[in-house]
Length: 498
Image (cartoon, rainbow, N blue to C red):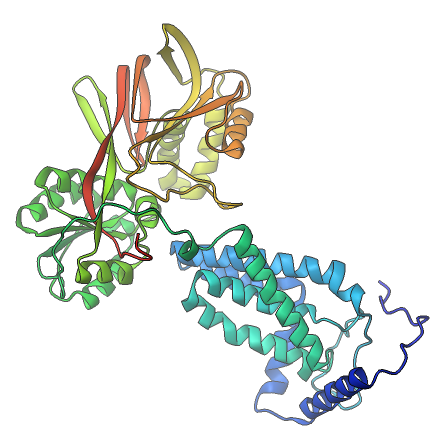
C-alpha cells in the first residue's frame, strides 16, 4: 500500500491566518507530547490500536446488544450505522480534500509511538470520526449507553494526538464529521423519540404512587427476575407472583380477583394471556417486557421498569385495540399478529428443535425444512374460488416501515387489521422475501396487502395451523379475524401529547 500524500504537489503560498492556525496546532501537538499522564503511556496506545478498522466499536456494539433490551439493540445498530457512514465519508472525500502530512514524531516519546505508523494523509482523523460517530449514534438512541461509551470515544480521539499520529485539528475535524454522520443517519432513520405516535384515547386509571393494588405475575421461564425486582424497588407496595410457564394462566386468574391493576412480566405469549384475563375482569393492564420477544410492549412505548413505574405512579394509560380470531366454537385474542400458512408451521418446527439446539439455530433449521416443502400449507376460498397461499398475515394495527428500519406500529388504536397475503406458486422463499422487501400496501403476482376491520375466510384447509402472538393452534373451514376497538386499557408513559 502506498501513501496518499502526493509529495510532488507544490506547497501552497503563504496565508497569514492559516499560518497562525497551523502554528498554534503545532504548539498544541508539542504540548501534548510533553505531557506524562498516569497510566496513559500503557493504555492509550493500546486503545488506539484496538480501534483500527472499527474492531473496538464492533466489540462494544456486541456488548451493548447483549443487554437484551430493545433500546440497547437499537443503540448498537445505530452506532454501527453512523460509524459506517462516517468511515465512508472520511475515506472517499475527507482524506483526499486536504492532503496534509502526518506530524513529525521527534517530540513524542518512543514508548508512546505506534509500532505501525499510518501512511494515509493526516486530515481529518478517521479514528476520531469513527469514535464520535459511534458514540453519538448510540447516545441519540439511548442517552444512558451514550454516557457509557462517551469516555471510551473521547480516549480514542485523544490517543491519536498522544501517540503522535495526528494534530489536534485533525481530531477535532474528524470528531465533527463523525457526529454529523450520526445526525445524518437519524435523518434517514428517526430515533424513537422523534417518532411521535398519534393521539390515543386516554382513560382514567388509578395512580398507584407506591404500587399498592398492583399484582404482577412474572413468568419464570422469561428469565426476567432481575427486571421484576428492579420494578419492585420502584413500586415497593406492589405484589409479585413468580410462577412456572405452565401456571401462568392460573396465577393470572387468581391475581385478577384481588388486584386493582393486573401486571405481567414475560414475552408476547404471556402478555397475550394477561390481556385476555384483564379484559374478562375489566382491569387495566401493566406490561413489563420480559422473555425473548416483546413487540407489544415496545410498540406501546414501555421498554423497561422505569417506563412502567413512571406510568403507574402518574396514572398514565391508553386504550388499545385487540384482535380476535374465531373458528366455530374456538376463539382467541391477539395483540400483535395472527397468521396462517408458512409461519405457523415454522413456529411449530422451531419449538420441536429449540430445546435441543437453542432458539436461533432451531429457527434457521425450521425455516430450511418448511421452505423446502412443495405442498402449500394453506388453501382458502375467495370470491367462490379456492386459492393456494403461502402466508396470510394479519397485524393488530398498521405496521409501518420507517426509513431503513424494520416495521413497527405507531398507533395501537387505529381500528384496522393490516392484512398481507403471499400467493401460492413456486419458490416460496423468494415470494416471502419479495413480500417482506416490498412493504405494506403493494400488489404483485406474488403478494398483496389491504387494511380492513374484519376478514372472513371460508374453505380453510382442515388442520391448518394458525399462529397468534407466538402460540399455535389448528383451524379449518370458516375463520374470522376482527378487531375489538379500544377494548384494552394499558399503562403507558405519555410523551409529547400522545
